[in-house]
Image (tube, rainbow, N blue to C red; front, side, top):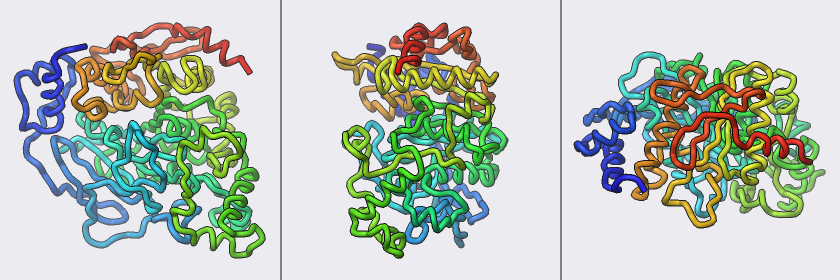
Length: 497
């Protein structure tokens, strides 16, 4: 069960406030080699950065400078609903960047492990930046893409904060992208109007590319290195990373990639084409009294209140039977192409990749996510690209139950982000913190150099089809390197119908 809880409390408070810093806390930080400098107890409340759109005022606290709620595209409302992201209008004066912008329009899921911190709204294309305070040299940049089935999720959940990783000496960026019917929607009149030169339907992916272009154009102003950018995503975010790795429109926008539970490269549903998405869009319009033949159908659809477009949709709809009344992202031939074919042919961005899944991910230990991670690891490594394969098997004692089979989907995120104390609060144990220290150290090393290895960490060998090398973040809370013990079972599952 680990050390007494009071030691964890000391550790948590040390990370949040330099005013509470005891000998016990020093011993704990030393024990796990966190490498954290003592935060400056003073606060510079007014750090400023000037970018192309205007001047921003952020916040510096506990050794981390952050700028939040930065618009990277114009609000996608009114006539810009179902349009590619448009340029940000410049602002005058100083824009307050001390808090997140709204998350994108959605119906939150009850008991979400990563609850939103901001109310959802259609005006949501904002991003956030964290960096170590006072750091002047160009910093490697990690860009986070959230999951949620392309129906839920946002950048504001506390467990997605980049403050802890910034204390380790990197910069982190997170952003919102449109989801649900706002992020994926097609209709014959949208296709016919061709307002964005052939870009139609996959508006959430368009947002992701717009955010990465913003990073390339602006991150140097914050002290980030645009030539050293790693993208990371989990679940729908991991699927997005697969899309970005293979998208012709994303080439050159990043230098490394991390895929967490990103599936096997297939689409999320049978309705995987523009024409099928158009049929769903026409049926939705009809449900709102808007006929396909109405010449003003598009105008009327854009005039619907956001709540009517949402129409009660959230991630639970993915698990319901019957025809769907919404679309998931689909191959469009421009942004999103056939992922598996691109990997097999070598027609993708050849950048180092870290990839894995949890031990009891969606479908179980040999299910969709586990098989998908191995399948894509093999396809990418067969092209001579460095791949670091992992499995996350650890389950915190505070959430373990009699029927627990392994680590659940998405449970690794707080560990890689070094935010386990935020996730588990006063139930956090020393062993939780220790594994978070290791997992985040591997991630930070990978962000810096493309190699997760570093001093004091077990050696993580690159994956090859011939060696099955992997890193298991084990059920006992250790980082264990070796050949994948599930390789033969996963290979059988890969060949099954």
